[in-house]
Length: 325
Image (cartoon, rainbow, N blue to C red; front, side):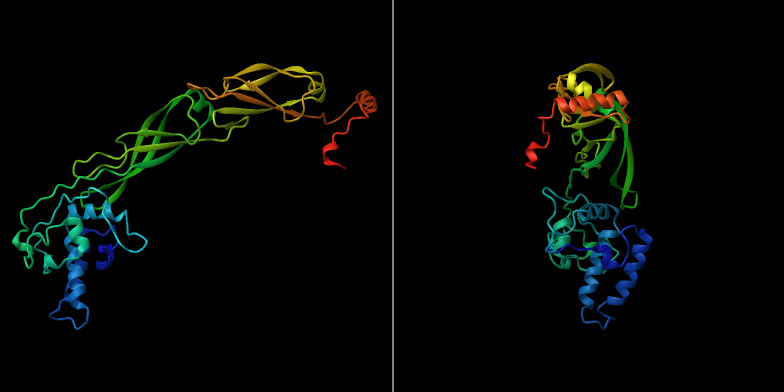
């Protein structure tokens, strides 16, 4: 079954007003009426125009069609309604077109029904069988992203989130509407995690439940810390003599600071683990302290003399031995 773009059939935009749709229909109906048109496909075009107008002139049908249109056609051009789809508007007597409802497309029949169920040859004014269907369709889930400072994710907070949902307006057009919610962020939210707010997505149709809102957490860049999963990393500069002799240095954590013992003989890039100082939770992460050996910008004559003595004392040490050069 091929997907029918009723807006394209009438040559109007998806935001066209009822008056614009009616005007376009009348123009095309005159052009393709089989009694006056000389075009070979006039009869088929006339039926397409009538079918399109039957849907778009009716706010309920138009809202349902716009909802389905978001699903679009498959790659091969075919279309299949979502599971459980059943029209709430059904097919009632329209009275505006001259088309025979029994000759409407399979696409129309699949969505709205009624044209064939009431018997071939029935006209619009014949009342299509009194069959009124109840279409219930769950609203779309909505996805939003929320940027947090690391401190907010660590301690938990309340944030305001704005996002768009699609719903039908008074004219039956599907339009975006902005919603704003206050959302409680639990302590320890990881980047990439989702918060699900049930029923806060797009409204359902025919009394069906609303979709859900899924909020994905992302972190704003931090001047000191980076995060890997639930672990927090911080790079701490140390002097060469602190690395060689060992030292006690003050290290920042999120919201506080602690004293950390640098082991004697530490190398550049060595990681020290602070258990439980990462993101909180049932299984809290750790904080990793990455040591960065930093040289003074200038040395005194005395310091240079000491380096010369150190070089002489350690002349058997080759830091590039693994390079085989």
